[in-house]
Picture (cartoon, rainbow, N blue to C red):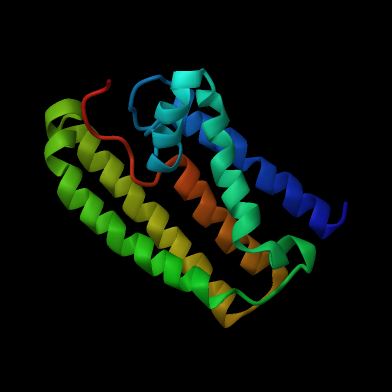
Length: 165
């Protein structure tokens, strides 16, 4: 199997991660954190009974964010990816501050602290992958850093903390 085909298959696997993070438990849990990238579209699409389509969003963004990755098997990471990871890191801190109260009230101390800790670990892995891909450009380093980023966005980033509708 060539690199392009394998990269496409791995990109499509993001759908499974997104489904697991959004629908596997039906309520926020440590393994089903209901990330913002899929939970808001699912709420919107539920009015027309298409909420399951929300799990396609991380995969679509993955392929659209860096088309050169799959099409040309580009080894060099775009600067905008580093900027996006930096912005998402800052927004994660803001989210932690703003959602802390709701997490404590509705999901409890243990859940809230665990979810925040898991998010920090995800960000650490993402930053390590991005720095490695930046310093030692290769197709697989670039692919891995993007894949981990969009896996986090689709599975765990900006988890739902609050009262369920």
